[in-house]
Length: 326
Image 1: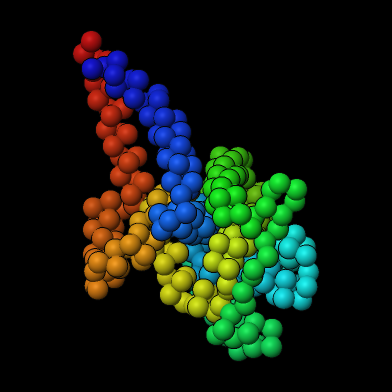
Image 2: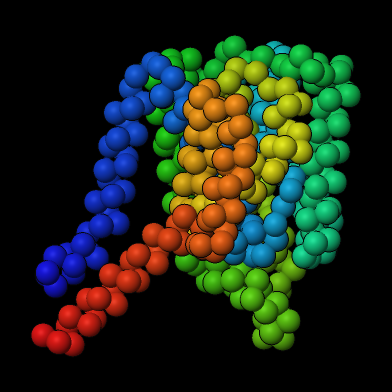
């Protein structure tokens, strides 16, 4: 039994990761509802992980991420509507969200706590209002369609399978980058800022700069998700940027578990299932989703990922007791 537990501790993570990757690749091969559902999960998971990087590691909870997702998507759509080539449109979308993140970050990170939540909410609502009312640029409620996707040689995103696999690859790259950031000295300093910013400032850390960089990283990756969003859906409209979308992103992070990166991705899977699968069968799916969130917060404050971590700690404790008695 001891040997089996030790073996599971060593290989559970890698084996589970490889198994999930293989399952995703297999499911994405099909041209049905399941593959569409998974692609949506992957896109929203990028936003949730980016939000967790900002909130779970830096302690800055944003209610404006949907706005930045919309900026990335609108950047691509507006550029193509003005006859930019598809790759140039991608550059415009990513450039727009990066510049906006750099500019707004100067204002946003000057405050903390509830003030940061309110100011990001205001930013998100301003962006939504521009998309809704600036009809000459955004087409208002009608939105802007995107029909031509980038291609180069045999690599063509207009092919549905290629697009789905690209979304999976981008998701994996973003997740690995965020995990690398969190495990780097920079990521450790962000945890220190969340725990006790005054002490880190006394030690000579430029805490304001660290919070600013975390904000820019989170906003940029949200913009990456926005580019993928408009490619997958073929349309961007103000609905994507409204307040309820921000609420769902926060729910993904809280349900999955703050400060875990993979947890919010799991939260995105659950929330998308509630929205797009369970809603087919239940009229009161929002009620069930709310009860699920309450149960997770009460019985597993660390979220779903925290529950998995707790199971791992119990296994490690059992291994330690068995080693002592052997």
